[in-house]
Length: 484
Ligand code: HEM
Image (cartoon, rainbow, N blue to C red; front, top):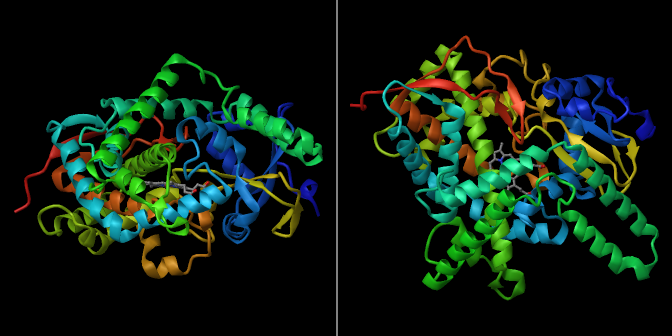
């Protein structure tokens, strides 16, 4: 057995399968890949990509053999401009060190302190809605999730797209979005890989030259608009504003509770307790947390409202749970104990619509996956969308059924059969944050307003950077009488 023995997904043309990734029906294509086999092959301009579409193969890639993989160069190229060497994009020793330094900031005990801000931001958003107003929930959830991350990161109360910083980050993010699966990107990845391969044969004297060429290629030179004035202006503004906040915090003595201060205050125990990160690294991490931390949560919240709108019974049960909460802000403790159904709804929304639908990796060494030997350099993509729809694991997979996440049923599930946050060492560091934010925002909003969506309207997911509701989630919001 070898790479060649892995079945090829039908439908390729001269350029391979690129057109199917760019077409409107990309999700159907992800399903077709899974139907071809638990390992199936596609090609991008002649470059093979192996898809892992079963829990067992995903587990091998993400968990058991994680140290044999790095993130695909494409991901790093796309986000390098914005997130630099932040946690999402970095590799090797730098990633290990940063993960070790940042993990304590995302422990449940620390995250608990952000519950109040999640509640406040949701209350503030609802207060801007007029009774009976038509809103796009996808847009509103993005505003809320951006507000939450802005408050948690920068202690800023005005953080949304109307804020200059939020706007600049959005510009950069939209740009990265627009480049996904672009043939130019694939060409650039191929070039980086070709250099990697040449590196192994090149004489030592060429090593410096090669390194410089590879560094240059990390910049998205080939990508449209990379040098465009709007993007450049946004990046300059980001750099300037974040540096200003860093300077303020240093001057004030790092007493604040926001994540930016905590990043600045991180100390490296392995380096005599010295300040662990340069300003540049802090900036990269702040941008990374913003990018990774808002759109995913916003998308999951939008889907949760959409699904509730189509299931009056579950919705009524969630409403009862929410109305039984004690008055006042929803604390970490009540979110963890008094919102089990609301939490299950949020999880089920991420099963049906995993916000990050592909985890792209590249092999650092020859390795076997499901017994098939794959050469170093092979791109291996984990495919959670069809994995979340395996009938053997999730009976009637298209049905919205939050009770799949009852603890006793979760305990029976095979490893890596549910992976909205990834798995293994690179699992989402913001997992506890998101699992707190989702239920708190849902519950806070459902206490304040009745959200009416059209139950007959079918919304198709579209894949931009995350799996978004195509055309948004139109709704009307009606104020509810205050409890008691
Ligand atoms: C519903 C919400 C979220 C979802 C579905 C989600 C999903 C993911 C996934 C799938 C990955 C791993 C990707 C891969 O292995 O290729 C990831 C990584 C990451 N996420 Fe999240 N995420 C969410 C919320 C957050 C939040 C709230 C934050 C921070 C405040 C965050 C920060 C990060 C970071 C920094 C990484 C990189 C971790 C590393 O490589 O060590 N995410 N996320």
